[in-house]
Image 1: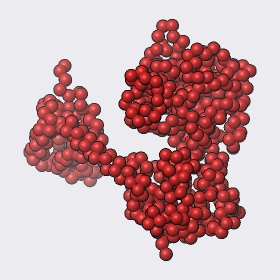
Image 2 (image 1 turned 45 degrees about the horizontal axis):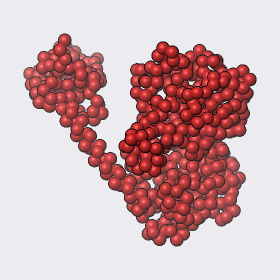
Image 3 (image 1 turned 120 degrees about the horizontal axis):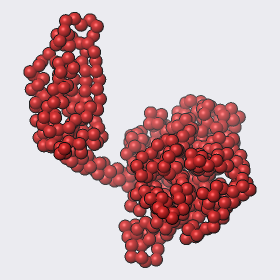
Length: 585
């Protein structure tokens, strides 16, 4: 019997995506309900999970490494392809729906092994793709992200020379519960109310983008502080009250305006973003202390803040008569963690143990130290795992009513026929079935092909653009023979430039006797990877390689081999030589 036929056996995987991933898709109380309803539950043991193996066993689960008997298997994050069992139903965050290249190996494995894949992101009300999501950790990402942002503000202000009660707030994972973390935030609020903030940081303002689950979670933490909500239009005229913090919710109409100065229409903006121009960076960002970014962003829309916007903000704050650097943007808590996304200066994600970095707009540089010029950036990509118990309980509560129907359904049927024994929410959430993408998600294949075509086109364009640049691997007795020096002399004589990417120097063996070439012929060979740019384009590279081949023939005792390395060896990046060669003194 195919294991896609529901047998009322449920598996829960051990999370291996990240050492901080302590969440579970189903908690012991959910397992108890399933067992009481006649399900068997298999749980892979884990010493890292926030719930112990003993708790699951006490709830009636079988704790075992072997999930082979389960027809449906649940996880939180991606299950490694080598751990996926064929002919099963899997439910986890797969991140394949955007056809991102890094997830396509997973999708290929799922299709090749006839796995029915459901992603929590695709479980929508009534099974309709545009309807609200029913299962999500977003609110807990917002809560953990906001708690971490308060910690970051304290550390950054200390680096600027100010000791504040923000330093008494830790990251969310440092507390045994969400409630205890909120207690620390309330203590911070009491200190602000009683003693005030430093004069140089008043008024302190927080701007929240959007008003979805993530934003509302962040707002929930913010409201533990003495606060006032204000309209974005009022951010520039607030009193310098040191005993409260100000919050504002920024929606799409505050981010962009019509190029033709027409009244903002949300539907028109989403349909024709090219007809709108950004305004947040000029109208509101100069009055924001901390930007809490909670919005979904797609490259077809204008960015909220570009790197150039940050440079302009910094320059404006330093201008004569300005209120000073301390009153310009201090921090960005990018809870969406969209790398190079709506906030372009989020150039990398951060991890839980080191959640912050500083972005220096003037130098376009990032550094882990929070000292010096720059904007504090927070970009942890697994924020809900900082609140593993509460987020798992909330998530399992939302998912529990779908588990038994899924564990009883027949995944061997044609996809359209599966609608008869699956809730609409689950049927609409199936990304793959019967070894194929389901009709709703067939676009993934088209997006993937288009991405691959574009990548190949760009690859060919870059090869053409860099026709005069390459990397040569030169192997042999390079030093005793003087071959490496002669090679570099030839490059320079032909007007080229070079950069040693890698040098592996191997000395002659101890058993060698004699001197000169006789010894080097018996010794170990050295290797040099040399990036080269020649002024005559590809013809210059070919000519150089011919000269080096001739040089190797003249002195055979050097035992030299010259090999041109693939274009992608340097990822198409030849800045070490391009721009330096061919310039006049």
